[in-house]
Image (cartoon, rainbow, N blue to C red; front, side, top):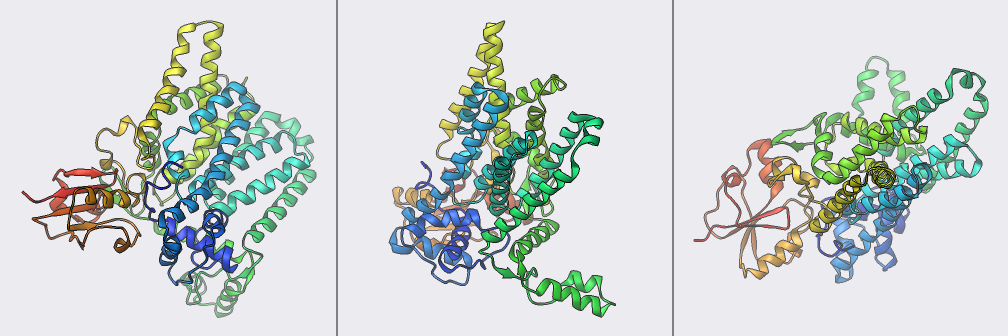
Length: 527
């Protein structure tokens, strides 16, 4: 909440607000299909309850900003949209507590929640009108419900699983591979736990019957999330290269394939969204890591991201929790083993993608890791009480380190880096981990404080600069050096864009006059 009125709208926020408002106000969902509607609806609900409505702009970005500037209160409208993530943050805390208390003890639950609410990646994305906090919280709920069903598939637990799966799938499409990998691991671990004899005696018909009912219920809930609409799977109405390539010499099959994907069906929008995400992953997305630019990503991108974006004290505690469980692998409960395996499975899924856009894409690992970190803290305290008192200092110091680091990072949780990143995190990561357009408010305030009457600017973001309260400005050239006056440049252009094509080479090695927030470099070329 403390960041709602400090950070300006990040790159993606207007798109999400526009799509959610369209769903609420018009009952349609046409702006963009790459994300499902539920989390977006939650983000648009605050502005909607304030009386704001769709402005019917053609472009989603323009629509989002038209909504935000409605009634002349941009900051209040943006805060109302960002408040839509608060229920998901609370849900994440609740799941961490319930998960840890059931399988690791009450002390682990308390420590786990304390650590979870002090994680800068969680706080940073919970304070924005974006989808990643919703994905993490709903995914954690689905994993918890799945573990409860594996224990005993009672009807009330199956209902919780259905609702949580639909919630997760309607928040973000990445929940499908995340939860698919986790569930496969869960079945495998349980099969090993039960043994061959138990598997032979298992009531498979009963099991698959319940799986079928859960699947059917989830599909109905998913369809409801799209207002029970009928839509074609095809992304557009023109030629489809995949069909043309596969059926070039088979006109009848080609015609049938076109008809299949262009005929409106239930859940057509959901399937279309999955297809768009799949195409995006095949094509890749421009990203930056360790001074290098790539379109298709790196297998080690997310290990680096987690290594520098997560508090070191938390990493140590989570690692200790994993070690404790793995050392007593045969004695530990299978639920504890799966708590270790689930974040590893999500991690491996992310490492196999070509869309490397930051810690937000792997936020779903933090709820189970918080459980493990809380378990490690509680075990250290229990060991101190039983035998060796000096070990008491370890969890206290590590938890204090996490809490103090979070406090010192405020309100820049989004651009937080731990001590591993050193003094120049921009040499490691850019994009939403450092610069997502969040510091435009602060730039405007700072230029006003410096009495700057004109500025040359290159800003990374979607915000309309003419409404940002800036002094008269001109767009900064990436190739032609400026020799006088103030210059403001988003750090993305000095990192990712420089690595891509050498843009702003004339500024690359010049130290800024100051850094506004964490993401805008301000230069003064006047003598």
